[in-house]
Length: 135
Image (cartoon, rainbow, N blue to C red; front, side, top):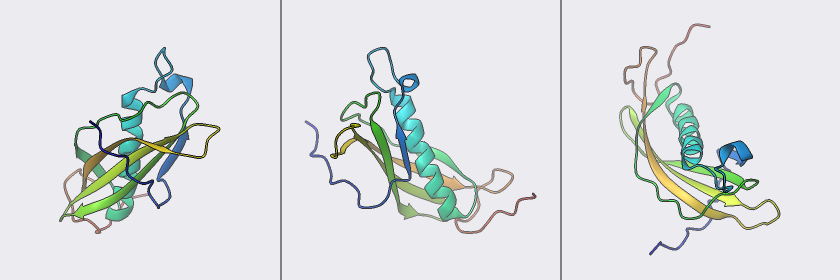
């Protein structure tokens, strides 16, 4: 049995998009990979801001899809850093959907992503030490 849905996050979403036909299967359900990609992208935005430079995904815990996302639904991705190590960041991410003509949003999945801050050669670097890049 699924756990009760958590209350909608109080923060602003890191990403908000409308699910389009190209993102769905023949039945109108959104592909899980599309949703996972948005969540990874959102977590990456948070990790890059927090680490002051490039950060790469090294792990993601398993996902369970709680509710379907349909074509036309608004999908919002929320995230927050829950742990920071020397070069790593653990980011909790939730995805919520809202039907086009409704006000209520429903959580559709969640996952925890781990990112590592890397330098210009792809080697781990301390979180918060900016990467110098040539322009």
